[in-house]
Image (cartoon, rainbow, N blue to C red; front, side):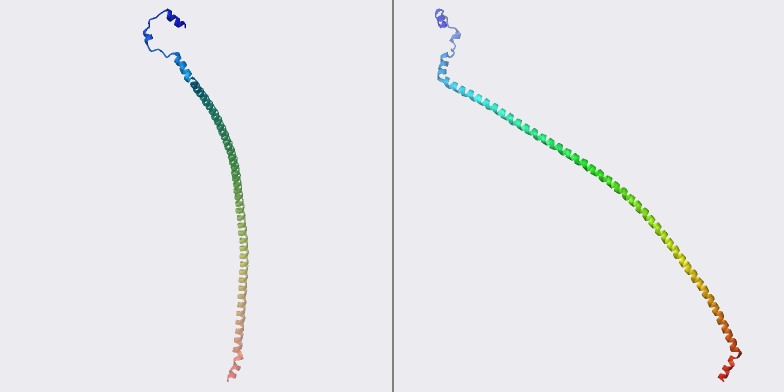
Length: 201
């Protein structure tokens, strides 16, 4: 209203800027607001509600994803911890089994060494016993051979003595037979032949 009063009191010549196309009057905005304002506000409200809904759902999805990710991470941590504990238990068990196996191997080696020493001792004792037995048997055989030699020598001595005695007896018999033959010859030469001759004539 002050503007209209000043225009009435002070006439101003139109400038080149006033000759340019004028901006749309505020009434057009009002008309537009009257015609489309409700719809625009409704659309803007809907867009704002949709945007808020999308933001809310996005935040909800992020929260759900974060929860699921946290759950997956927690489950993965639990699985990894369980696997690590199981691996540690397996390693400890294998270490114990290896220690037990090493102890068994050491015991087995000690037992083998003991058996080896025992076998060597038994072998030495058996060798000594065998040598003693062989020596004893050789001594017994030597003694038996000595006794057999003495017996054979005694038997030979007896046989030789017997043969000498028999030889003496044969010599005596030869002498006796020779003496008897001589006597018979003398008796035949002295007179025993005449009767035989007369018997013959």
